[in-house]
Image (cartoon, rainbow, N blue to C red):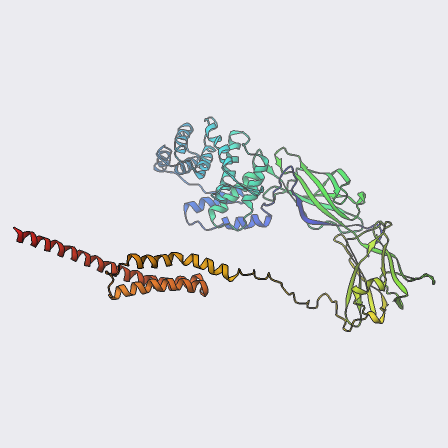
Length: 615
């Protein structure tokens, strides 16, 4: 148990509450993430493309890369200059311009801009537009780059928002990261703030750095480029505020330590950090405000020991200043102030129901167990009184969990009650056997009384064996079999009650509707009898018999499907019957056609012979 005057502080590391006014970066590159990203970029060069991604990506993260001098032939120079034309794609123009700029070779910026603008009107994809931004950042500032800069606003309009937290192109992470890198590089080049809102920058940041395992070298390069752009540009630098380790847990100090960094986890030591206000979550009362943090090394510290916080949860509003580029610099932190609970004024009493005898009270000091036993029966009640205080400040406490548990020493039966405080915060539990017999199943015996105290802000939750209580119920109330109320015993099986089947209609109704359904068939038979059925063309060829039997079998299958089969079984049988019936029917119709054609030919031949004889 802590000494009086001590204070224990725990930060829920790190609970950042997104304020209603602005978003905060929920995803960024930790130091471990930066090292892993460097490892992803540090690969053997398998091609010129992989060499570019690796070298430029590592340089963006501040890694040292060997400087190698190369000589460029006139043929290569002419090839690069020739690629800057309207006949080339945007990708080819970008590669050529970037190579010429990187090698320090002369370049006609206005001609390159004209070729780029002309080609961009034919390629309206997101990637082509981003490459146009990258190309423009290598051109002279004297060139009129406004038409390219205006493409940024169009690209922002094509972004997809996810849950109000993420903003990205449907093309994926790589395209989104390249857009951020290209936008800030071009805006730094022309000296104009990009047409992107601060909340959109944070949403883009969350989308880009939410993925930790990158699939390809090009994806790692794009993430590294975006991280460098968001950390070093002239307009928007997202601020990341994280807790540094565990706050102080001493008797002398209560310190909140914060690390303020950029997206690459590089400390912003030039910043100034100030606590705007600290409010109690429960009462919303302001307990501290306008207090600056102190920079100790790379860590900003706030010592609030003198504020004498009571235990509970507090919302700390922290503001980071010192640079007008900082965005997401208002952060809400939820801090938990923990303490130790003490139990005082613990009295155990037996009270006579008719008050003919004065109450017998015994005081117990935590954590000792009361000597002797206490009796609760039909003549006297048992009562427990106690108070809970903050060991550090002496203030009264009302934890969320205050229970009295009674455990039957013989049967293992457990009964739990909630202890409630009165208006003076004095907790009372009274056991009247006539009122509580249902909870105990009228099971008399010796019960061990435990006091359970718990709360998220308590450093020392309590389970205290207070005393032994003999509980006696009237003999006529005792059941033949005492069922254990142990919480961990198997419960009685649940018997489900399903809806009873609906009542069938009368037989007369069913028969009537059956007759109505069969009436068309009866009408068919009647007409056949009256008019006559044409069966003269029916043959006993195998195909004819198989077709009619197959058709009848399919009708029978429909009946079996209704009574016994399911859909999949029916389809299997129907496929077999249908195939045989189809082939037999096709053969039958072919034979009928041949027979009809032969009859027509015979008729024509007979008519021809008759005419010939007549002449």
